[in-house]
Structures are given as structure tokens and as C-alpha cells.
Image (cartoon, rainbow, N blue to C red; front, side, top):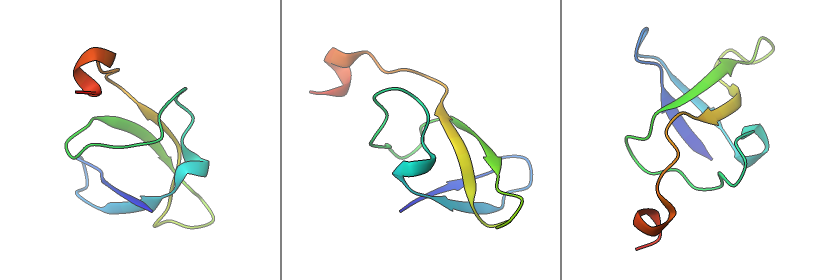
Length: 62
């Protein structure tokens, strides 16, 4: 389970790997920027989560 915070309303939303749609994105580092949609059926859940900044693979896997 992952937790993200919306910078605009400062609310927290949960999601798991099934909501991640960015290719190769299965781990999250604290402070990474992501974009997500709030699930209409569960207002505390994020869905369609994408990573905004793709890390340099050499830097990411040090």
C-alpha cells in the first residue's frame, strides 16, 4: 500500500500497485512527484497513478 498527498488540498490518498499505470513503476521513493485521479467510488483512494519524473536508471539503482 502506498500513500500520496495532494499538494493542493493536502489530503492523503492510498493506492497499491494495481493503480499504477507508468511503465516500470513498481516502487516509490519519498518525495517523488506523481499525478493521480481520485476514485469516485472511494474518495480516499487514488487511481491511475503515474510518475511525473522518470529517474535516470543509473542513478535510481545505485
